[in-house]
Length: 546
Image 1 (cartoon, rainbow, N blue to C red):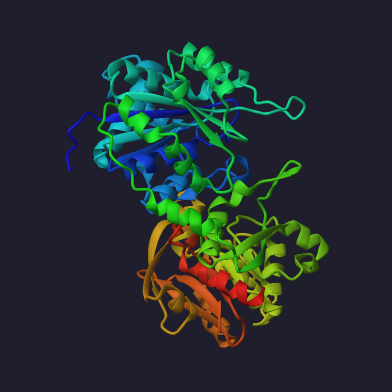
Image 2 (image 1 turned 120 degrees about the horizontal axis):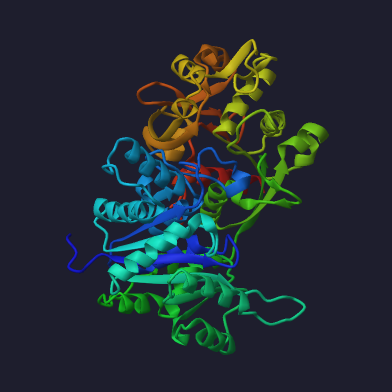
Protein backbone atom coordinates (compact mmCIF):
# COMPACT_ATOMS: atom_id res chain seq x y z
CA UNK A 1 0.00 0.00 0.00
CA UNK A 2 1.33 3.43 -0.92
CA UNK A 3 1.70 5.73 2.05
CA UNK A 4 -0.28 8.98 2.06
CA UNK A 5 2.34 10.92 3.99
CA UNK A 6 6.04 11.71 3.55
CA UNK A 7 8.57 9.14 4.70
CA UNK A 8 9.33 9.62 8.39
CA UNK A 9 12.69 9.12 10.13
CA UNK A 10 13.51 8.31 13.75
CA UNK A 11 17.23 8.51 14.57
CA UNK A 12 18.29 6.75 17.75
CA UNK A 13 21.64 7.52 19.37
CA UNK A 14 23.30 6.46 22.60
CA UNK A 15 25.11 8.26 25.34
CA UNK A 16 27.55 7.71 28.22
CA UNK A 17 28.31 3.99 27.77
CA UNK A 18 28.14 1.38 25.03
CA UNK A 19 25.68 -1.47 25.38
CA UNK A 20 23.16 0.93 26.91
CA UNK A 21 20.19 -0.60 25.07
CA UNK A 22 19.79 1.35 21.84
CA UNK A 23 18.97 -1.87 20.02
CA UNK A 24 16.22 -2.81 22.48
CA UNK A 25 14.87 0.75 22.38
CA UNK A 26 14.93 0.79 18.57
CA UNK A 27 13.16 -2.58 18.45
CA UNK A 28 10.60 -1.48 21.05
CA UNK A 29 9.77 1.73 19.20
CA UNK A 30 9.50 -0.24 15.96
CA UNK A 31 7.20 -2.79 17.60
CA UNK A 32 4.94 -0.11 19.11
CA UNK A 33 4.55 1.77 15.83
CA UNK A 34 4.09 -1.44 13.85
CA UNK A 35 1.40 -2.48 16.35
CA UNK A 36 -0.32 0.83 15.62
CA UNK A 37 -0.58 -0.11 11.95
CA UNK A 38 2.49 1.54 10.42
CA UNK A 39 5.03 -0.19 8.20
CA UNK A 40 8.19 0.31 10.23
CA UNK A 41 11.61 -0.68 8.92
CA UNK A 42 14.67 -0.58 11.21
CA UNK A 43 18.24 -0.13 10.03
CA UNK A 44 21.46 -0.31 12.07
CA UNK A 45 24.55 1.71 11.15
CA UNK A 46 27.70 0.29 12.72
CA UNK A 47 31.02 2.06 13.27
CA UNK A 48 33.57 -0.57 12.35
CA UNK A 49 35.47 -0.80 9.07
CA UNK A 50 34.61 -4.49 8.62
CA UNK A 51 32.21 -4.99 5.73
CA UNK A 52 30.06 -7.15 8.01
CA UNK A 53 30.26 -8.84 11.42
CA UNK A 54 31.33 -12.24 10.10
CA UNK A 55 35.04 -11.97 10.80
CA UNK A 56 34.73 -10.39 14.26
CA UNK A 57 35.53 -12.47 17.35
CA UNK A 58 32.28 -12.83 19.37
CA UNK A 59 34.14 -11.67 22.48
CA UNK A 60 34.86 -8.36 20.74
CA UNK A 61 31.35 -7.43 19.66
CA UNK A 62 28.95 -10.17 20.69
CA UNK A 63 27.38 -12.97 18.68
CA UNK A 64 27.15 -12.06 14.97
CA UNK A 65 23.52 -12.47 13.97
CA UNK A 66 22.94 -14.58 10.86
CA UNK A 67 20.15 -13.49 8.52
CA UNK A 68 18.18 -15.59 6.07
CA UNK A 69 19.94 -13.96 3.10
CA UNK A 70 23.36 -14.82 4.57
CA UNK A 71 24.12 -11.38 6.01
CA UNK A 72 26.36 -11.64 9.08
CA UNK A 73 25.15 -8.73 11.15
CA UNK A 74 25.26 -7.12 14.56
CA UNK A 75 23.16 -8.92 17.17
CA UNK A 76 20.78 -5.93 17.31
CA UNK A 77 19.47 -7.19 13.97
CA UNK A 78 18.38 -10.32 15.82
CA UNK A 79 16.60 -8.13 18.35
CA UNK A 80 14.69 -6.45 15.52
CA UNK A 81 13.67 -9.85 14.12
CA UNK A 82 12.47 -11.16 17.46
CA UNK A 83 10.50 -8.03 18.37
CA UNK A 84 8.94 -7.53 14.95
CA UNK A 85 8.55 -11.18 13.91
CA UNK A 86 9.93 -10.38 10.46
CA UNK A 87 13.14 -11.25 8.65
CA UNK A 88 15.99 -8.75 8.43
CA UNK A 89 18.76 -8.78 5.85
CA UNK A 90 21.50 -6.81 4.14
CA UNK A 91 19.26 -3.72 3.81
CA UNK A 92 18.91 -3.52 7.58
CA UNK A 93 22.61 -3.60 8.47
CA UNK A 94 25.29 -1.19 7.25
CA UNK A 95 28.86 -0.69 8.46
CA UNK A 96 31.00 2.38 7.90
CA UNK A 97 33.40 0.04 6.09
CA UNK A 98 30.65 -0.78 3.60
CA UNK A 99 29.93 2.94 3.16
CA UNK A 100 33.60 3.81 2.56
CA UNK A 101 34.06 0.92 0.12
CA UNK A 102 31.01 1.93 -1.90
CA UNK A 103 32.22 5.52 -2.22
CA UNK A 104 35.81 4.54 -3.06
CA UNK A 105 34.66 1.97 -5.63
CA UNK A 106 32.51 4.64 -7.30
CA UNK A 107 35.42 7.04 -7.37
CA UNK A 108 37.60 4.38 -9.05
CA UNK A 109 34.90 3.88 -11.69
CA UNK A 110 34.88 7.64 -12.34
CA UNK A 111 31.23 7.88 -11.27
CA UNK A 112 31.85 11.24 -9.57
CA UNK A 113 32.95 12.75 -12.91
CA UNK A 114 36.30 14.00 -11.69
CA UNK A 115 34.91 15.66 -8.56
CA UNK A 116 37.11 15.74 -5.47
CA UNK A 117 35.51 13.09 -3.27
CA UNK A 118 35.11 14.21 0.34
CA UNK A 119 33.60 12.86 3.54
CA UNK A 120 30.93 15.53 3.35
CA UNK A 121 28.87 15.36 1.22
CA UNK A 122 29.82 12.01 -0.38
CA UNK A 123 29.95 9.79 2.72
CA UNK A 124 26.88 11.44 4.27
CA UNK A 125 25.00 11.25 0.96
CA UNK A 126 25.73 7.52 0.77
CA UNK A 127 24.36 7.07 4.30
CA UNK A 128 21.18 8.94 3.39
CA UNK A 129 20.89 7.00 0.11
CA UNK A 130 21.08 3.71 2.05
CA UNK A 131 18.18 4.83 4.24
CA UNK A 132 16.07 5.83 1.24
CA UNK A 133 16.89 2.68 -0.72
CA UNK A 134 15.88 0.49 2.23
CA UNK A 135 12.69 2.49 2.70
CA UNK A 136 11.82 2.05 -0.98
CA UNK A 137 12.67 -1.67 -1.01
CA UNK A 138 10.35 -2.32 1.92
CA UNK A 139 7.69 0.33 1.27
CA UNK A 140 8.33 1.89 4.69
CA UNK A 141 6.13 4.45 6.39
CA UNK A 142 8.72 5.04 9.11
CA UNK A 143 12.45 4.33 9.14
CA UNK A 144 13.95 3.65 12.58
CA UNK A 145 17.67 4.36 12.27
CA UNK A 146 19.96 3.13 15.04
CA UNK A 147 23.34 4.86 15.15
CA UNK A 148 26.07 2.57 16.41
CA UNK A 149 28.41 3.52 19.21
CA UNK A 150 28.12 6.45 21.58
CA UNK A 151 27.75 10.19 20.98
CA UNK A 152 31.18 11.79 20.92
CA UNK A 153 33.05 8.98 19.17
CA UNK A 154 34.91 10.09 16.06
CA UNK A 155 33.99 6.86 14.20
CA UNK A 156 30.29 7.68 13.95
CA UNK A 157 30.38 11.43 13.32
CA UNK A 158 29.20 11.03 9.69
CA UNK A 159 26.05 9.25 10.84
CA UNK A 160 25.23 12.22 13.05
CA UNK A 161 26.01 14.57 10.18
CA UNK A 162 23.55 12.64 8.01
CA UNK A 163 20.95 12.95 10.76
CA UNK A 164 21.55 16.70 11.02
CA UNK A 165 21.32 17.16 7.25
CA UNK A 166 18.06 15.21 6.97
CA UNK A 167 16.57 17.18 9.88
CA UNK A 168 17.44 20.41 8.07
CA UNK A 169 15.93 19.15 4.82
CA UNK A 170 12.79 17.61 6.35
CA UNK A 171 12.12 19.32 9.71
CA UNK A 172 8.58 17.92 10.02
CA UNK A 173 9.59 14.36 9.21
CA UNK A 174 12.62 13.68 11.43
CA UNK A 175 12.96 13.17 15.17
CA UNK A 176 15.97 12.22 17.26
CA UNK A 177 15.76 9.91 20.30
CA UNK A 178 18.76 9.86 22.61
CA UNK A 179 19.18 6.81 24.87
CA UNK A 180 21.43 7.60 27.81
CA UNK A 181 22.61 6.09 31.06
CA UNK A 182 21.64 7.51 34.44
CA UNK A 183 23.94 5.89 37.02
CA UNK A 184 23.21 5.60 40.73
CA UNK A 185 26.62 5.41 42.44
CA UNK A 186 26.41 3.30 45.60
CA UNK A 187 28.35 5.80 47.68
CA UNK A 188 25.86 8.54 46.76
CA UNK A 189 22.57 6.68 46.63
CA UNK A 190 20.87 8.95 44.09
CA UNK A 191 20.69 8.97 40.27
CA UNK A 192 23.11 11.40 38.61
CA UNK A 193 22.07 13.34 35.53
CA UNK A 194 25.39 14.99 34.67
CA UNK A 195 26.65 12.21 32.31
CA UNK A 196 23.51 12.58 30.18
CA UNK A 197 23.74 16.37 30.29
CA UNK A 198 27.24 16.12 28.82
CA UNK A 199 26.08 13.59 26.23
CA UNK A 200 23.28 15.89 25.09
CA UNK A 201 25.76 18.77 25.00
CA UNK A 202 27.84 16.66 22.60
CA UNK A 203 24.78 16.20 20.39
CA UNK A 204 24.10 19.94 20.50
CA UNK A 205 27.68 20.62 19.39
CA UNK A 206 26.93 18.57 16.23
CA UNK A 207 23.80 20.60 15.52
CA UNK A 208 21.35 18.03 16.90
CA UNK A 209 18.72 18.71 19.54
CA UNK A 210 17.06 15.48 20.70
CA UNK A 211 13.28 15.40 20.75
CA UNK A 212 13.22 12.65 23.38
CA UNK A 213 15.62 11.35 25.99
CA UNK A 214 15.19 7.70 27.01
CA UNK A 215 16.86 7.23 30.37
CA UNK A 216 18.34 3.84 31.20
CA UNK A 217 18.50 3.43 34.96
CA UNK A 218 17.99 0.93 37.75
CA UNK A 219 14.56 2.31 38.67
CA UNK A 220 11.95 4.61 37.19
CA UNK A 221 13.11 8.20 36.93
CA UNK A 222 11.71 10.49 39.61
CA UNK A 223 10.31 13.97 39.08
CA UNK A 224 13.42 15.76 40.36
CA UNK A 225 15.60 14.06 37.73
CA UNK A 226 13.05 14.84 35.02
CA UNK A 227 13.16 18.50 36.01
CA UNK A 228 16.96 18.52 35.84
CA UNK A 229 16.93 17.03 32.37
CA UNK A 230 14.28 19.50 31.19
CA UNK A 231 16.32 22.42 32.53
CA UNK A 232 19.75 21.44 31.26
CA UNK A 233 18.95 19.41 28.13
CA UNK A 234 16.25 21.67 26.66
CA UNK A 235 13.80 18.76 26.47
CA UNK A 236 10.28 19.02 27.82
CA UNK A 237 9.70 16.97 30.98
CA UNK A 238 6.98 14.94 29.26
CA UNK A 239 9.50 13.89 26.63
CA UNK A 240 11.85 12.31 29.16
CA UNK A 241 11.03 8.60 28.91
CA UNK A 242 12.01 6.23 31.70
CA UNK A 243 13.48 2.84 30.76
CA UNK A 244 14.34 1.02 34.01
CA UNK A 245 16.00 -2.36 34.47
CA UNK A 246 13.51 -5.22 34.03
CA UNK A 247 13.54 -9.01 34.24
CA UNK A 248 12.76 -9.45 30.54
CA UNK A 249 13.49 -7.10 27.64
CA UNK A 250 10.06 -7.95 26.23
CA UNK A 251 8.54 -5.84 29.00
CA UNK A 252 10.13 -2.70 27.61
CA UNK A 253 7.60 -1.94 24.82
CA UNK A 254 4.82 -2.17 27.40
CA UNK A 255 6.70 0.14 29.78
CA UNK A 256 7.27 2.69 27.01
CA UNK A 257 3.63 2.44 25.93
CA UNK A 258 2.43 3.22 29.47
CA UNK A 259 4.31 6.51 29.16
CA UNK A 260 2.53 7.19 25.83
CA UNK A 261 5.87 7.16 24.05
CA UNK A 262 4.36 5.81 20.82
CA UNK A 263 1.63 8.45 20.63
CA UNK A 264 4.11 11.21 21.46
CA UNK A 265 6.33 10.04 18.60
CA UNK A 266 3.40 10.00 16.17
CA UNK A 267 2.43 13.50 17.27
CA UNK A 268 5.92 14.89 16.64
CA UNK A 269 6.01 13.16 13.26
CA UNK A 270 2.60 14.66 12.37
CA UNK A 271 1.07 11.24 11.90
CA UNK A 272 -2.46 10.15 12.93
CA UNK A 273 -2.63 8.39 16.27
CA UNK A 274 -3.75 4.78 15.90
CA UNK A 275 -4.46 2.37 18.73
CA UNK A 276 -1.64 -0.13 19.20
CA UNK A 277 -2.47 -3.82 19.61
CA UNK A 278 0.02 -5.07 22.22
CA UNK A 279 -1.76 -8.33 23.01
CA UNK A 280 1.13 -10.43 21.62
CA UNK A 281 3.66 -9.12 24.15
CA UNK A 282 1.10 -8.94 26.95
CA UNK A 283 0.46 -12.67 26.49
CA UNK A 284 4.21 -13.30 26.29
CA UNK A 285 4.92 -11.47 29.57
CA UNK A 286 2.23 -13.49 31.32
CA UNK A 287 3.92 -16.65 30.08
CA UNK A 288 7.34 -15.44 31.23
CA UNK A 289 6.09 -14.49 34.68
CA UNK A 290 3.88 -17.55 35.24
CA UNK A 291 4.92 -20.03 37.98
CA UNK A 292 7.23 -22.68 36.59
CA UNK A 293 6.73 -26.43 36.90
CA UNK A 294 10.41 -27.39 37.16
CA UNK A 295 13.92 -26.05 37.07
CA UNK A 296 16.31 -27.38 34.43
CA UNK A 297 20.06 -26.83 34.41
CA UNK A 298 21.84 -26.65 31.07
CA UNK A 299 25.63 -26.81 30.79
CA UNK A 300 26.92 -24.84 27.81
CA UNK A 301 30.43 -25.90 26.87
CA UNK A 302 31.93 -23.13 24.78
CA UNK A 303 35.05 -21.11 24.08
CA UNK A 304 33.88 -17.49 23.88
CA UNK A 305 32.79 -16.75 27.43
CA UNK A 306 35.87 -15.01 28.79
CA UNK A 307 36.64 -11.31 28.43
CA UNK A 308 39.44 -10.37 30.81
CA UNK A 309 38.32 -11.28 34.31
CA UNK A 310 34.66 -11.35 33.29
CA UNK A 311 32.26 -13.63 31.44
CA UNK A 312 30.25 -12.47 28.47
CA UNK A 313 26.70 -13.61 27.70
CA UNK A 314 26.56 -11.73 24.41
CA UNK A 315 28.98 -14.16 22.72
CA UNK A 316 26.10 -16.65 22.52
CA UNK A 317 23.18 -14.19 22.55
CA UNK A 318 20.99 -16.00 20.00
CA UNK A 319 21.46 -19.31 21.81
CA UNK A 320 20.40 -17.88 25.16
CA UNK A 321 17.37 -16.25 23.51
CA UNK A 322 16.31 -19.55 21.92
CA UNK A 323 16.66 -21.36 25.27
CA UNK A 324 14.52 -18.69 26.93
CA UNK A 325 11.82 -19.00 24.28
CA UNK A 326 11.65 -22.78 24.69
CA UNK A 327 11.76 -22.68 28.49
CA UNK A 328 8.83 -20.24 28.62
CA UNK A 329 6.91 -22.50 26.25
CA UNK A 330 7.61 -25.52 28.47
CA UNK A 331 6.99 -23.65 31.73
CA UNK A 332 10.40 -24.38 33.22
CA UNK A 333 12.82 -22.21 35.12
CA UNK A 334 16.05 -22.18 33.18
CA UNK A 335 19.48 -22.18 34.77
CA UNK A 336 22.59 -22.17 32.59
CA UNK A 337 26.13 -23.08 33.59
CA UNK A 338 28.90 -21.75 31.38
CA UNK A 339 31.86 -24.10 31.13
CA UNK A 340 35.07 -23.12 29.35
CA UNK A 341 36.04 -25.96 27.00
CA UNK A 342 39.74 -25.38 27.69
CA UNK A 343 39.08 -26.02 31.37
CA UNK A 344 37.69 -29.47 30.49
CA UNK A 345 40.90 -30.20 28.58
CA UNK A 346 42.92 -29.41 31.71
CA UNK A 347 40.68 -30.83 34.44
CA UNK A 348 38.58 -33.50 32.73
CA UNK A 349 34.86 -34.00 32.13
CA UNK A 350 34.04 -34.39 35.82
CA UNK A 351 33.74 -30.61 36.07
CA UNK A 352 30.60 -30.85 33.91
CA UNK A 353 28.82 -32.69 36.73
CA UNK A 354 25.26 -33.91 36.16
CA UNK A 355 23.32 -31.17 34.40
CA UNK A 356 19.92 -31.86 32.88
CA UNK A 357 21.28 -31.09 29.41
CA UNK A 358 24.50 -30.22 27.58
CA UNK A 359 24.94 -27.89 24.61
CA UNK A 360 28.07 -27.45 22.51
CA UNK A 361 27.47 -24.32 20.40
CA UNK A 362 29.12 -22.61 17.45
CA UNK A 363 32.89 -22.27 17.39
CA UNK A 364 35.92 -22.02 15.17
CA UNK A 365 39.41 -23.44 15.35
CA UNK A 366 41.44 -25.73 17.55
CA UNK A 367 41.35 -23.90 20.88
CA UNK A 368 39.04 -25.78 23.23
CA UNK A 369 37.95 -28.28 20.55
CA UNK A 370 39.15 -31.36 22.45
CA UNK A 371 37.25 -30.20 25.52
CA UNK A 372 34.07 -29.91 23.47
CA UNK A 373 34.64 -33.35 21.92
CA UNK A 374 34.99 -34.75 25.45
CA UNK A 375 31.76 -33.00 26.48
CA UNK A 376 29.89 -34.50 23.49
CA UNK A 377 31.17 -37.96 24.38
CA UNK A 378 30.36 -37.46 28.07
CA UNK A 379 26.78 -36.55 27.21
CA UNK A 380 26.47 -39.71 25.12
CA UNK A 381 27.94 -42.00 27.76
CA UNK A 382 25.99 -40.47 30.65
CA UNK A 383 22.77 -40.33 28.59
CA UNK A 384 22.42 -36.59 29.24
CA UNK A 385 20.30 -34.77 26.60
CA UNK A 386 22.71 -33.26 24.10
CA UNK A 387 22.34 -30.55 21.47
CA UNK A 388 25.24 -29.78 19.14
CA UNK A 389 24.98 -26.59 17.09
CA UNK A 390 27.16 -26.30 13.97
CA UNK A 391 30.64 -26.90 15.43
CA UNK A 392 28.88 -28.85 18.19
CA UNK A 393 27.44 -31.17 15.53
CA UNK A 394 30.83 -31.63 13.86
CA UNK A 395 32.58 -32.37 17.15
CA UNK A 396 29.85 -34.84 18.14
CA UNK A 397 30.57 -36.72 14.90
CA UNK A 398 34.27 -36.81 15.81
CA UNK A 399 33.46 -38.03 19.35
CA UNK A 400 31.27 -40.80 17.93
CA UNK A 401 33.88 -41.81 15.33
CA UNK A 402 36.62 -42.05 17.94
CA UNK A 403 34.74 -43.65 20.80
CA UNK A 404 32.09 -45.81 19.11
CA UNK A 405 33.38 -46.54 15.60
CA UNK A 406 36.97 -47.01 16.77
CA UNK A 407 38.40 -44.41 14.37
CA UNK A 408 40.77 -43.17 17.04
CA UNK A 409 42.48 -40.48 14.95
CA UNK A 410 39.26 -39.01 13.58
CA UNK A 411 39.32 -35.22 13.47
CA UNK A 412 38.25 -32.19 11.51
CA UNK A 413 40.48 -30.95 8.70
CA UNK A 414 40.08 -27.49 10.21
CA UNK A 415 42.08 -28.46 13.32
CA UNK A 416 44.37 -31.12 11.85
CA UNK A 417 44.99 -30.98 8.08
CA UNK A 418 47.22 -34.06 8.41
CA UNK A 419 44.66 -36.30 10.11
CA UNK A 420 44.36 -39.71 8.38
CA UNK A 421 40.61 -39.67 9.12
CA UNK A 422 39.05 -36.28 8.34
CA UNK A 423 35.45 -37.14 9.22
CA UNK A 424 34.81 -33.40 8.90
CA UNK A 425 36.45 -31.85 5.84
CA UNK A 426 36.33 -29.35 3.02
CA UNK A 427 34.52 -30.55 -0.07
CA UNK A 428 36.71 -30.26 -3.22
CA UNK A 429 35.10 -27.05 -4.49
CA UNK A 430 35.76 -25.40 -1.12
CA UNK A 431 39.36 -26.60 -1.10
CA UNK A 432 40.08 -24.88 -4.43
CA UNK A 433 38.65 -21.59 -3.21
CA UNK A 434 40.49 -21.81 0.10
CA UNK A 435 43.78 -22.27 -1.71
CA UNK A 436 43.17 -18.86 -3.31
CA UNK A 437 42.62 -17.49 0.23
CA UNK A 438 39.08 -16.36 -0.67
CA UNK A 439 37.86 -17.41 2.76
CA UNK A 440 34.42 -15.83 2.52
CA UNK A 441 33.70 -17.82 -0.64
CA UNK A 442 34.08 -21.13 1.19
CA UNK A 443 31.30 -20.43 3.68
CA UNK A 444 27.78 -21.80 3.61
CA UNK A 445 25.72 -18.80 4.67
CA UNK A 446 22.01 -18.07 5.05
CA UNK A 447 18.99 -20.30 4.59
CA UNK A 448 19.46 -23.79 3.08
CA UNK A 449 16.61 -26.20 2.39
CA UNK A 450 16.88 -29.75 3.69
CA UNK A 451 15.00 -33.04 3.47
CA UNK A 452 14.38 -34.77 6.81
CA UNK A 453 14.33 -38.55 6.93
CA UNK A 454 10.99 -40.12 7.90
CA UNK A 455 10.77 -41.76 11.31
CA UNK A 456 13.70 -39.87 12.82
CA UNK A 457 13.64 -37.69 15.91
CA UNK A 458 14.35 -34.67 13.68
CA UNK A 459 11.29 -35.56 11.58
CA UNK A 460 9.18 -35.78 14.72
CA UNK A 461 10.46 -32.42 16.03
CA UNK A 462 9.93 -30.53 12.77
CA UNK A 463 6.69 -32.32 11.98
CA UNK A 464 7.73 -32.17 8.33
CA UNK A 465 10.04 -33.73 5.77
CA UNK A 466 11.09 -30.40 4.26
CA UNK A 467 12.72 -27.72 6.34
CA UNK A 468 15.22 -24.88 6.15
CA UNK A 469 17.82 -23.54 8.57
CA UNK A 470 20.37 -20.77 8.42
CA UNK A 471 24.01 -21.78 8.05
CA UNK A 472 27.31 -20.18 8.95
CA UNK A 473 30.14 -22.63 8.54
CA UNK A 474 32.92 -23.81 6.25
CA UNK A 475 33.56 -27.51 6.95
CA UNK A 476 31.23 -30.41 6.18
CA UNK A 477 30.54 -34.01 7.18
CA UNK A 478 32.75 -36.28 5.07
CA UNK A 479 30.44 -38.71 3.28
CA UNK A 480 33.29 -41.21 2.84
CA UNK A 481 32.62 -42.13 6.49
CA UNK A 482 28.82 -42.14 6.35
CA UNK A 483 28.30 -45.92 5.97
CA UNK A 484 30.92 -46.77 8.61
CA UNK A 485 29.33 -44.46 11.20
CA UNK A 486 25.77 -45.45 10.31
CA UNK A 487 26.62 -49.13 10.85
CA UNK A 488 27.74 -48.19 14.36
CA UNK A 489 24.45 -46.44 15.12
CA UNK A 490 24.86 -42.83 13.98
CA UNK A 491 21.69 -41.67 12.21
CA UNK A 492 21.94 -39.11 9.42
CA UNK A 493 18.47 -37.64 9.70
CA UNK A 494 18.63 -34.71 7.25
CA UNK A 495 20.53 -33.71 4.13
CA UNK A 496 20.53 -30.51 2.09
CA UNK A 497 18.05 -30.59 -0.76
CA UNK A 498 20.41 -29.99 -3.67
CA UNK A 499 23.95 -30.95 -2.63
CA UNK A 500 22.89 -33.77 -0.26
CA UNK A 501 25.23 -32.46 2.44
CA UNK A 502 24.66 -33.83 5.94
CA UNK A 503 22.55 -31.41 7.97
CA UNK A 504 21.43 -33.31 11.08
CA UNK A 505 22.77 -36.32 12.95
CA UNK A 506 21.19 -38.09 15.90
CA UNK A 507 21.15 -41.25 18.01
CA UNK A 508 18.17 -43.55 18.25
CA UNK A 509 16.05 -43.06 21.36
CA UNK A 510 16.64 -46.69 22.27
CA UNK A 511 20.31 -45.70 22.73
CA UNK A 512 19.96 -42.17 24.09
CA UNK A 513 17.00 -40.05 25.31
CA UNK A 514 17.95 -37.01 23.18
CA UNK A 515 21.16 -36.70 21.20
CA UNK A 516 21.06 -34.46 18.16
CA UNK A 517 23.50 -32.30 16.22
CA UNK A 518 22.53 -29.83 13.54
CA UNK A 519 24.84 -28.21 11.01
CA UNK A 520 22.38 -25.33 10.76
CA UNK A 521 21.58 -22.72 13.38
CA UNK A 522 18.04 -23.13 14.72
CA UNK A 523 18.82 -20.48 17.35
CA UNK A 524 18.57 -17.80 14.65
CA UNK A 525 15.02 -18.82 13.77
CA UNK A 526 13.56 -18.90 17.26
CA UNK A 527 11.10 -16.18 18.29
CA UNK A 528 9.31 -15.28 21.54
CA UNK A 529 5.99 -17.07 21.41
CA UNK A 530 7.28 -19.17 18.48
CA UNK A 531 10.18 -21.20 19.90
CA UNK A 532 12.15 -23.40 17.55
CA UNK A 533 11.00 -27.06 17.68
CA UNK A 534 14.53 -28.40 18.20
CA UNK A 535 14.94 -26.27 21.32
CA UNK A 536 11.46 -27.22 22.53
CA UNK A 537 12.34 -30.90 22.08
CA UNK A 538 15.64 -30.41 23.89
CA UNK A 539 14.01 -28.66 26.86
CA UNK A 540 11.31 -31.36 27.01
CA UNK A 541 14.02 -34.02 27.23
CA UNK A 542 15.82 -32.03 29.92
CA UNK A 543 12.57 -31.75 31.92
CA UNK A 544 12.32 -35.54 32.04
CA UNK A 545 15.79 -35.85 33.58
CA UNK A 546 15.39 -32.89 35.98
